[in-house]
Image (cartoon, rainbow, N blue to C red; front, side):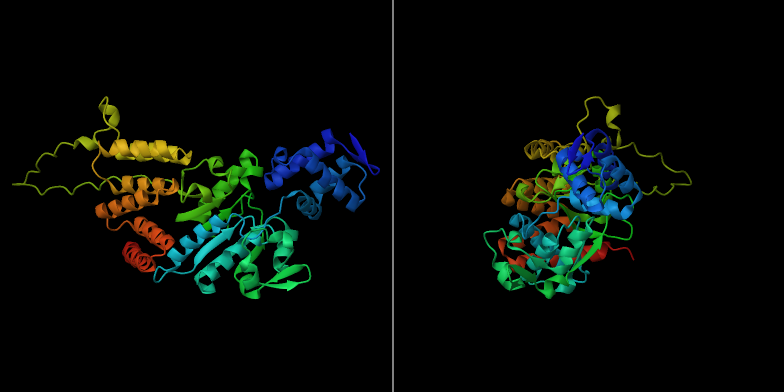
Length: 420
């Protein structure tokens, strides 16, 4: 038991109960920030409310949602700055510009959750505007559990602490100096829609999505396993089939689902794992001859279950599943080795070359990635994801004409695939 300024902070009682409440409310694993940090937050709120005992304060927090929110404000880590990890924003700009250039499509949708004081979503908006996109070509939603952080974002006033990058030229373009701080341009602020929401809440995804890009950086590292499960479930519901998820540096291994690297290792971006390979549709029955139907032909070897033939080579689906599982664990070299060996035993398949392209891209080998995407298209000219991947690579090389060619081709393919 600890006594500070006449107020009793009971580690075994009141603080432990509050840690349990925080675990239930926002999925917080208190060990990630340390019990002393929770104690400091409790003492601050006890002083503000005049409470003398942490056990009694814990009872009050459990009854009073307003006080609960104020306690959460003291606990959450809301520090950020503009263009934190610049390479992440460069990657996202390439993704958004590529998708926004598809003829006939609506705005590219982006979510930042959590968003702290707005530095991240505003950085996205500035980067997209600097890239030449118009505000109507994208939307940015930003949510956070902290009302105080959202109020800071709405004000759009930032101190020098928010400008930590070596290159702060964006400050001259988008901010107006005011005393020791700077005010963000209304043109940028109007690009972001803020809302208070708890990402860990089971009801969070309701009424939202789908999103082409989701930022969820440096949240999972603070959560309990159950909190992480809830967030990943929400992301899975909110992200488009070919969407991109951007995480913090330590977070890709935390994910439990099927995810693959979407860019180089330095951007910590993920995309959904390999989709199951669809089985070919059965052939229509042959017409009867002289009133009698001929016997059905024997099943081809590929249709015989693997378990029925001891020592049978792995199928394409087996290879994609095994390589995808290794890629999800960031074991890119091993995943590529499995794909390379399988090329000698299996017929050429667009799914295999596309996976290899994604793996080479994640490993930073852009030339080999590009070659694999071209082989994908040689085998399947309607592979829209390969076309978009090539458009993205062309954009990064600065080849605007070729990027536009790939985008136009992808748009035609997608238009044909849309249901009537």
